[in-house]
Picture 1: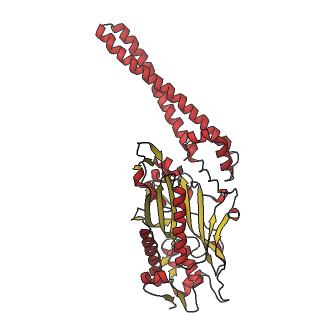
Picture 2: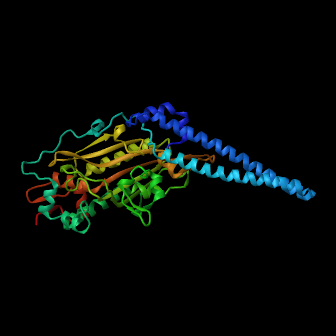
Picture 3: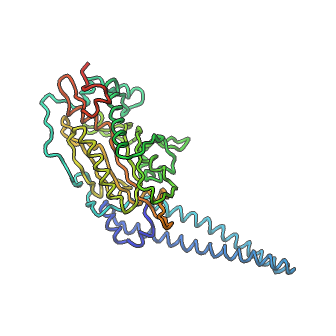
Length: 426
């Protein structure tokens, strides 16, 4: 959530930056926020004045009663009663204005970093790094949805029967390979200094608002209406909310947390190969890394997190590229995002497997997450996160790129975790 003071100080700059996202006339929305905040201030001042006057009159009543001037005291009491009525109405009005202002701020996305270019779709994204050569498979190469049927490692039909489309069962060597990837990703994060936690997969409404999933992505989240809880779309949400309403000492920064969770997304899939098989699921496994940073260090930390994800993908021997998202493709809460995409040789397409983002103070303002320096001054921290990694599309690329007629080779770094070197055809 943007700071109103920052909007006031940077109105023209913020308006220009939000235009990168494809927002029409953002200055009108920002000016409306300033106007609403002006109303909040004048209402607060009027209320403070009435409360101050009420306190003054309360003291006068006591003095008049001591002097025996009951008639005068009664007149003052009547004025006090009138002020009490006014203060109640003003308090209710102030509460409504503050709620309206908060909702207006909730619906303004983060300001893109200066490196983010204008654009509307993924075609406008910038390719920052890519491999020189892409793998070529033989004419008999198959997409992963055919391979998983042949090798019997994932059962979409059973998932459809038990739950519905987009909820597969992983079987036999497929289940072990998924577990191997999760354990490998967690172990590598631990080596990099991340503290591992196992967060809940249900969050309350406050947590959804704090990290920006609500109200922006409400329609994409599974909602349990009777308890008003939501299934998490990513471990970012519960992990980052660990620090909601927290004041850290500057010496405690950065905080590095990693967690594995299943993730749940309602986003509807359309027909076509881009949503077949493992390309888009409603439930999937992911390891997430989160850092809470000093503002002066967050872009160094962003580079560190990018290197971490890059080394993971390299270790799996997968061809990849790094893409910096344009304004129109940028997530609502992010100031800058780098996507990692691996190449699926059988599908001949790029599959997104990780997003690494810096949110600057956008989430921390919602979270009320601050740090205190050695002089006691409190400031908003920066938050960052990244997928390290999402399992399904990594699995899809591994199956397709490593296929042979009767076996699918397992990357060397995973073999100690799986206990086998290849998935063999039954």
